[in-house]
Length: 287
Length: 190
Image 1 (cartoon, chains in turn blue, red):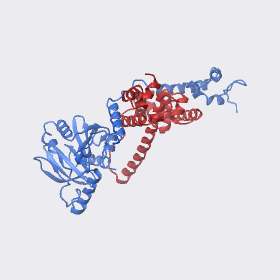
Image 2 (cartoon, rainbow over the protein chains, first blue to last red; image 1 turned 90 degrees about the horizontal axis):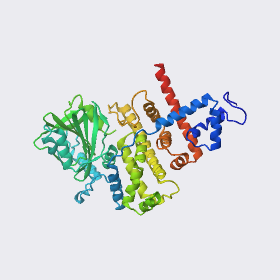
Image 3 (tube, each protein chain N blue to C red; image 1 turned 90 degrees about the vertical axis):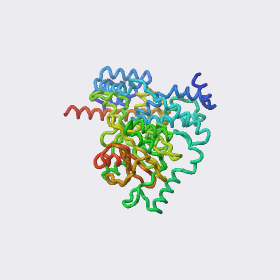
Image 4 (cartoon, chains in turn cyan, brown; image 1 turned 30 degrees about the horizontal axis):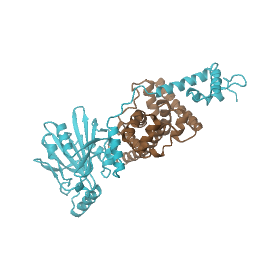
C-alpha cells in the first residue's frame, strides 16, 4: 500500500522509510540510503516529525555530567583479585577471620543454636522461656556512652568488632546465613545511612545506621550463640508487636532483640515500643 | 601504552596495567550499571564483579573488538542476572506482604538515575518512562544513546546480529515513545 505521504516512483515512501529512520538518526545508513531518506524528509512532515521525536529521545538519554565513581571501587576489586589468585573467597570485603574461629562457621553456630533451642527449650521467642541467647557480644561498649553521643557509641561498637563499610548487597552476601532485611527506608521516615560488615569473633554480622533528620537508629544482625554482656544494664523480656524478644534500656535508649534459630536482630532506638517500634522491627525481619 | 600493549600486560597479571585499564573504562562501565540499577550500592557491587570477572577471564579476550565493548558485555550480563534475581525477590516480597499484611518499608532505591528530577522535565519524564521498559530494552537504549555504542559494538555486547540490533532498538524506542506520549496525554487531560 502506498502511503499518502509517498513520493514519486523509485523514491522512498513513508512505509519504506519508516524502518530506516532509526538507522538514519543513529548515522548507521550508507551514504546512498541516507541521501534517499533526506530526499523523502524534504517533503514529508510526518516523517520529519518522527525523526525529531527519535532525536529528542536520543538527546534525552545522553549523559549531561560525568559519572562520579566511588573511590572504594578499585581497592575492593584489587582485594577480590588477590583473594581469587590465592584461592580464597572471590570478593573479600572484610578482614579474613582469625584462625582460631575457623570452626565457628555460621552453619555451625546456627546448628548449635538450633540444638540448644530444642534441647533446652530456650527459643528466644517462646512465651515462657527465658531471654534469647545472643552471641558472645559485648554490648556494653554500645550502651555505656549512648546518652552522651549515640553515633560515637555506635562507632566504638563497630570498631570493637572490626566493622568495614559496605553496601546492602555486600552485607547480604557476607552474612548470607543470617535472615534480615535492610530496607533503604524504615517506617516512620528513617533513611538508611551506612551499612557495615561486622566480624563478631569470626561470625559474620551486619550493622546499619538510619536517620530521621538528626534522630539516630541502629540495626544490628548477628548469629545467636551463647551470651551477651550489657555492662551495668539489665536485660528484660518484652513483646514488640507480634514478636517476643528482650530489651536493655539505657536512659531513653532501648536495645531490643528478637532472635530465632539463625539470627538475632537488634534495633537500637528511642522509639515507643507500642507504636513506632513494631513496624520498624517488622521491616528488618526476613521475608 | 596503547590498548593492545595494555591488554597484553593485563593478561600477564600486571596489577598496574589492570588499574590503568580500570581507570580508562570505569566511568562508562559504572555509569551504565548505575543507570540500569538506579542504585549506587548495586552498581558498585556489579562493577566490582564485572572487573574481577574480566581480569580473571582476560585470556579469553581475542582483541577482535575494543576492550571497552568486551567490558560492556560482561557488565550487561552481570546486570541482567542481578536484575532478574531482584525482580524475582520483589515478586516474593509482594506475595509475602499480601499474605501477611506486614507493614514493610519501601525498598525501592532513593538514588535517581542521574537525570534531572523536576516534573515536566523531558529528562525526568525519560527516566520514569525508561524504568517502565524491560531490562533488555533499557540496556540497548542506554548502550546506544548514553554510552554511544554503534550498531556493530551493540551487536558484540548483546551477542546478536546488527540487523537484530536495529529491530530491537526500533522496538525499544517505539515502546519508549508510546509511554512518553501516554504520559503527555494524561497530563494534558488533567
